[in-house]
Structures are given as structure tokens and as C-alpha cells.
Length: 489
Image 1 (cartoon, helix red, strand yellow):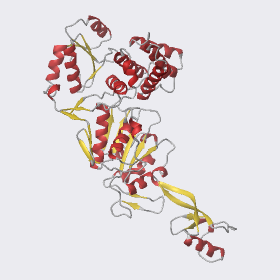
Image 2 (cartoon, one colour):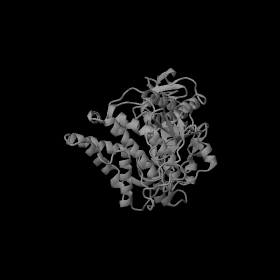
Image 3 (cartoon, helix red, strand yellow):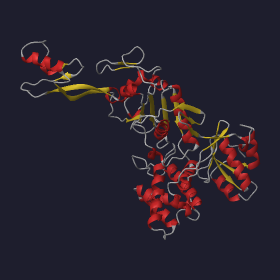
Image 4 (cartoon, rainbow, N blue to C red):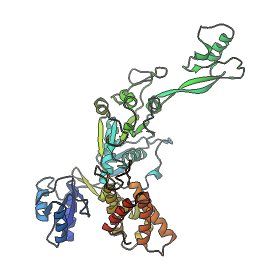
């Protein structure tokens, strides 16, 4: 027999309903995850009921098996002594007129009316589970202490949306920049762009151009005249209109945010070249500074010509360096990100909670640092699905299938069994689940007389199986469907 290790996925078999409720609460309290699938589990915990078949399968798979009594004893000896029911309960999010609290982090609201504040409709599907809230808390902690924040994690680990959601609650304007291999430093700090100078706003320029036409002035060529405003101007003989062609320096998103007190999200940071993103080094210091050496030399920060607005903040997201096309960041650059949070990818529990939130409006409870947090029920996105008989079991099986197909696709660091011959792996995320549920909801509205099981099977076909190119991959996915009881719907 073996004692489960913290962080592993636990399967429960042969427990009474009371024991299973207690076991699930203890697991959540101590950082474990409950899974209904033996294929996804790292340890099997068995009670006094009949679990011989599960034990047999576990032994064939070399899966550790632990009796329920031994499991409880090991839990009680390796963590908080308070029972889950004795933990204080508190709302996970508290929004006041002048502040917002995220778990144990409270920070003031900006209450800006800028169109750069993310809209409320972008977060209709949010499930405030433990992983999402801990990521949002890391962002809140960084903002509260004026630290740069880096969120690292797999695709669809709620990195960017947690930042934008918090910005929405605070009324904080956000500039989002998607970086890639073709990005250059000018996108961050600025560049010279063509424009037009008029006689009214460029009197000095036109006087100098007139001097050049009359043979006066300096020896500079007319094609490269620098105005007093720091703009390169091009003069061409024969221009008699009220305008002259000109170039002017347009500040990038970082200096603009420094002036106005905006947040800057650098998405997919490690897709850009290291020498590009390291242009941000001065802005990552405390206090932040920046010199626009690419332009007229404007200096931001203490002792400079432009003070940095209080609300300015740099945040970034990135996938692990093992992802294709990602650059390896230098230790010095990584060290400048004072808050570096590992956003965990969702599992079966999180996917099930998300589906319940979409259908019933239920938000999950979770324990964090000795407090049990909860969120009030929200308005369900697909309430019509709640009337389907056995819908909760269908949603649980759908979440299990989603986890299985993600694992088969090689997500989470496992070796892929789907698409092994492909250069690009298949990707299944929360978005895939959202699409599947939306297809089911639309089918129910249009044809309520058709059995819901058949409609769910068709939604899975359209959202999941249609992505698979090879016949062998489709057969493997159908095997996963049957394993989770969805193949014969």
C-alpha cells in the first residue's frame, strides 16, 4: 500500500457517500485533485465497499492502491488540522466603490471610463475556480506592490483573461500587445512614421524650407530637415500647396502607458527575439524609467522630463520554453519580473465546474491558506440544458472525455498518442468545451424533440472528432468516447 503524494490525482472507489464527501473535502483542502477516471489517476483510494474490479485494473496498470483509513491517517498527519467544515468562509471576490478584494489581496479601483477598459461581456463564461482565482491573486499582488508580473503556463491556462478580468473589476485601461517572431522594439517604444505638416502648425519648418528655396540657411540637404518639434521633413521642389510631407516620432504602447497610467500586457513574450523584449529592462526596474533614444530622447521616470503615471504597470504571459518557436529568456531578464506565477492548466475538476457554471450558474468552493472561499451563483449561459434528464452525469462524462483527449494529444507534457506523425500537435482547450456546449445548446433550441444524448454525440463529433485528420486518430478518439460512456449516446 502507498500513501498519496500531494499534487497527485486521486481516484475514489468503494466509499459510502458520506466517506466520499469527506474524502473530497480533505483532498481539496490539502491540494489534491479527485478524478473519476482510473486512466488519469496517480493513486487509487478504496473503502470497505466492493472495489475489486477497480483494484484489479489498478494493479494491471501498476497504479498505487491505498485503503481509505490509511489515507485519512496520512492526510491528518501532513497538513492543517482543522476539518473542512471548521474553516472560515469568505467570498472570493469583493467589489466596493473604491476597492476590489481578490482572495486576500485588496487594491484600489481606477474607475476609468476609457474605452480601453475590457468590456463585461468578454467574461460571460468565467468559472471562478481555485486555479483561476490564484492566478488573478498573483496579478493583484503584483499590481498592489507595483511589481512587474509574469504569468507562465500552458495554452488556455487563463493567463491573459485573468489580467483583463481584474482590469475590468478595477476600471483599469489596458493595452494588449501580441508579440511574435517578427516583432521589433519599435512596437514597444515607438518609431518614425510619415505624416503631414501644415503651415499653421509647422511655421518654423516652412520658414526653414523657404530659406532653402532662397538659397539661405544651413548646408543641410532639403530632403532631411529636422524641425524644432523633432520631425524629419522632406522638401521637394515645386510644392506650392499648404502642406509639406513630414515624418514624426510616434510613441509605442509602453511610453504611452507610462504617460496615461495604463497597463501593458505583453502576450506570448517569449515568441519575440530576446534582444527585442530586453528593451523593456528599464521599465521593469523599480521605479520604472525609459529613454526614447530611438526618437527625441524623451526621458520617463525620476529626474526625467515625463513622470510615470501611478497606474502604469507591465504584465506579460508566456508558454513554457518547450513550446515550438519560443525563445529562452536570459536569467537577468527573468529576474526583473518580480512576480513570476505558474498558471496551472485545468483538470477534470475545473472542467466539470466550468460546465456546471455554464449550465446552472454554480460557482465552486475551494480552500486557500486556511480559508474556504466561495462565489455567489451567476446567471447561467445555457439554462435550457439544465432541464435535460441526467445532464449532470453527461457533463461529468464530457469533462472526463475532454481530459482524456487532451492527454492523448500530448498536452501537459505527456507523449502524444493522437497525431504522432504530425508536425503540429492537436490542441484541445476550454474553448473546445465552450464550442461543444454551445453546439449542444443550439441543437436543443432548434430540435427539442431529438434525444439530448444524440445531440451531444453530434456536438462532440463537430467540436472534437472533426479536427482529427487521420482515420487512426479518429478511431482512438472514439475509443476514448466509449471509455467515458459517450460512445453510444
